[in-house]
Image 1 (cartoon, rainbow, N blue to C red):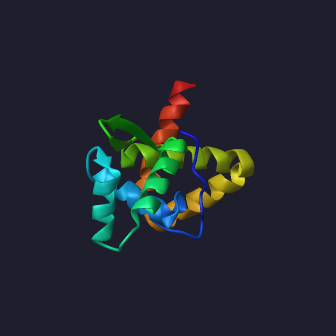
Image 2 (cartoon, rainbow, N blue to C red; image 1 turned 90 degrees about the vertical axis):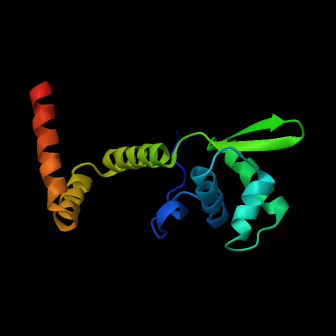
Length: 137
């Protein structure tokens, strides 16, 4: 899936989506196929949202290829194209590829520094992955 615009100054899903888009995706990823009305009702539990605004956002997410829309009788039902995990995996893969294409060894150096700070276990996983890749050559 084509990477969504990535905002480095945001957190979580807001890095990929606008605030309401992120909330809509959270609702849909936590449930099953849902109508605009059902999503709006869930959103209203936290903060009131206007029906037309929710409808517009959901249809834009369809246009972006993040949701699918199916019409049953007179009701539109929406489903995420990917699970949350699949979406985040795809986006992180695209981001990493873009960073590597643009910054190369600088990015690798910074990632290694970040690994040391984050979790020593991750560095061990990386070592095993590098050994595996070297064996495959």
